[in-house]
Length: 387
Image 1 (cartoon, rainbow, N blue to C red):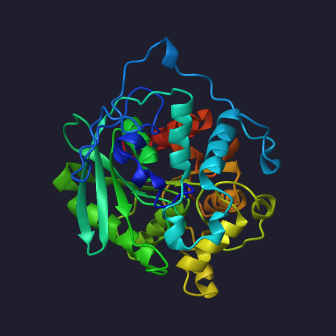
Image 2 (image 1 turned 180 degrees about the horizontal axis):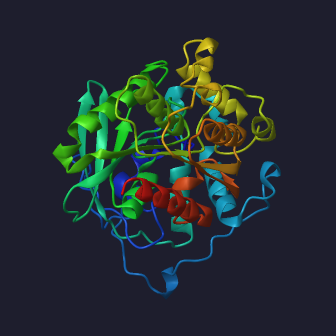
């Protein structure tokens, strides 16, 4: 949940182009040609035309300005710099004290990463994907990312964004999607499912499964291969991706070829070791997770549903899985438990935890080295599965 929210990036002069900053610090990035994007690729995060680099604007090493927070003494410097920026932008009121409407306007970790890039003169990578929007059903749209200049039929990854099923949107997680497009060469369909509290459980889960089925039926219309489809997601989106695999299995619908679960919500126990160790962490902590459950679930009984409480669900027959967790994250324990339980159920699992970083690190590859590593791992596993 990229402290996630219907992010303040919507208030930037060039939100789509600005989000392209984060997806990768390797070679290229994406060209946004969505019907909704008004900004050109030459626009910077400040809304001013990008200029050529000079000696005065060379990228600088990303370093924090103060001591590590008490909750994160082992934060790596690049991650700490982003957290410092997020803290400065967010103000004194904790996210869990806001209403959903207020939280959707709050600065996100994506916003903080963009600001960190500006502060340290990290340039915008070139762009390498085109996008278009489609409506899956009333109230549910998808954004389809296609590698720029791609020819022929390509595999497809259905991606679900985070935000605790309550906040955030496609733009908030645009950096992660663009990185995966660039590094896998696949088409990615990013799903804008409906959110609580306006749409309570299981709306987001049903919307996500409907979008997956829509992709299977319509992939050929956007040059996708309907026989090579994977699912992926971060945080609440990781939960949705796994739930979609379970729903496909149970309803005898074509199974995904692979599932990428990045720091997924996988349980309803707020007293795991990582929950108890991460009561003050940013951008996600125990109180904020309780807030998400409050606004998405109808009653506490929903928390025991197998599509919420993945660690206690029947996991047999699910697709091979890449599962990523991080150190400063209340969801780490349940993520590791899910990886273990998938393996016990006979599922092939590639699991990796990254120390020194927080929830939401995955989309920060332009700043945070561990994000670049995690993206490479995830993309490699997806490419192998979609051959």
